[in-house]
Image (cartoon, rainbow, N blue to C red; front, side, top):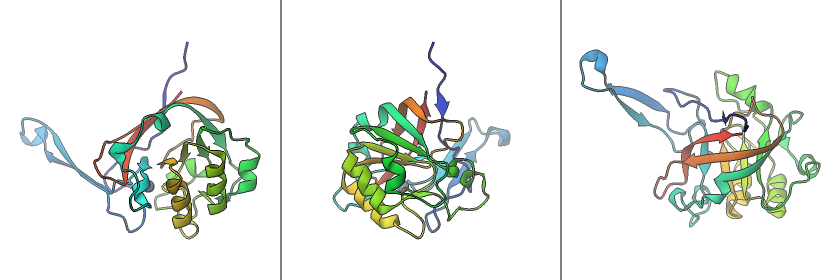
Length: 210
Ligand SMILES: [Zn+2]
């Protein structure tokens, strides 16, 4: 029997942590049965890069693909989760070389972000990210999809632009904002379905593994 699916997306909630400077996440009940309305109705407003979400190439590449153009292969199928729990700052080429990443793989990186950053009440500026040369190494390895366990593949004060430009420029599909606390290293089936936002540079998504 197959093991149960595990949800590795974070809950979207009103006022939740977001990238500094990006629009806040507002989720408000605008019609409520408690107040006599015939139904409950919720209004949402947020950045497309809130919580667990994907980056389309258009995020950093002026004429890059947008969310509704995303092929399904990068987000459905076998993936590999790598635990890099000793990484304190940035994932480096040396860290990645040890992993023997195969071409055409979908890879998710679990770092201390999953237990540390998501537990914080404020945005964690010191989250573990991917160094620019490590991003280039992933491109050279020919990976199709890269997932990380906080809000950006690049760091807050380092390589934020470069890492995005390198990976999105090479056509890698990026999943950000995963919570992999309950997941160990190994092979999984991945299903990640972002909203089909036309013309968008990113979209929130639900991600499950088993
Ligand atoms: Zn993003």
